[in-house]
Length: 343
Image: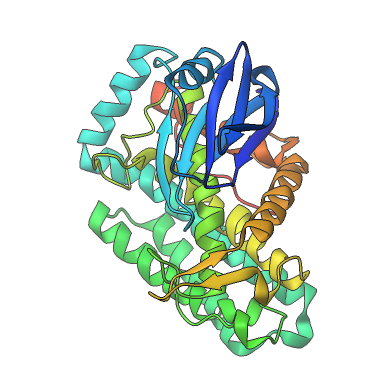
């Protein structure tokens, strides 16, 4: 199993990355702000627009360190990796399956199944932990998600039908998302999911956490020899890491939504940690972003029991474990892709 190392998050928009030997150097206004040996890193996520030198990109590719770029809004922009690794026959099979709509649908159904089961687990866990705040809307939503899971298991769908099912079940889930927020501060009221740009504080945190997930999933897929750009549920589009978006679907509730809820319910972030732009976009302030990233890195170091592998692994290694299982399925080593389902 891959070793969990640190991820370097570069949050200052004026930062520029360069190389000195086998170290990544972070400079701000042409002054060195810090350096990290490449051997201590598993990934770099940069939130600025100044970018990185070709030399530091070469260094990352040499050591298998994913380099991802994210906008200040938290929108995933790009991922840089080295030469494709792994067996070329694996990627050939990936492309073949992606071109076959029914074969793609069979795999996509498992991504969605994992997502809906984890959405249901988020709701039921809250009802167990906070029975005094659980209302009929939340329990009804959990029941509808159960019906959706049953439908996904008992029927075959086309890709468009799957997207419709996923959209409706996600709507049921987010309809009661506000009930999961313990804070009664009106600044943290959730009404509807909004993105590009996020229009309230909850959506800003969700978009931010999803971008971090996308970067981790892209790196994980590359590490096992799969092409992050060629997906099954999300179809090919230039510049979009479609397979990374596929893989992260099952992680959205467990690693994304629960993380955001913990930030709010544990008062790690406050209402004044955000700035509202003239166009209505809501962004995390720099200090708050650093706090969120520190909490995210701590979360990744925690351990969780993987029900399929039947062992404890670091939370940060979950994308790598699932990428490996997806590769095994495409090679024919296992009959179906087993999504990660939280307990």
